[in-house]
Amino acid sequence: MQEERAFVPASIRQQGPQTLGVTWGDGHESEYGVRALRLACACASCIDEWSGKEQLDEATVPADVRPLRITPVGRYAVQIAWSDGHETGIYPFRRLRALCACAACRPEPAAGA
Image (cartoon, rainbow, N blue to C red; front, side, top):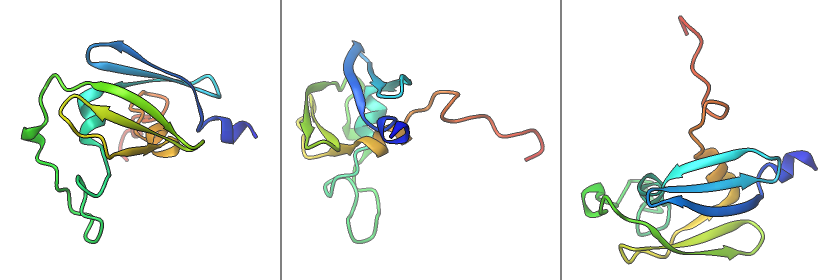
């Protein structure tokens, strides 16, 4: 049960113009750069669903892109409507947690590895 809670947000909040914060059910705190999160969209418009090739041109995403709406999708994901007009991406909780770049989630590789 504890493991499942790790993949369910307790809260999602805008922490500043460029940062989205998530507190997870296990108490872990994640911070996401909003542009990086927008670029990580895996919808069919951003990633070719047959080949897996990225379709999104990073240059078309404004530096000041920001979430306008964050809507729950069932009990497994959120959908984010972005200020650049994109709103078809769904971020499943497990994928969102996997995108966390903090030291606890992305430990440095051991020396010599």
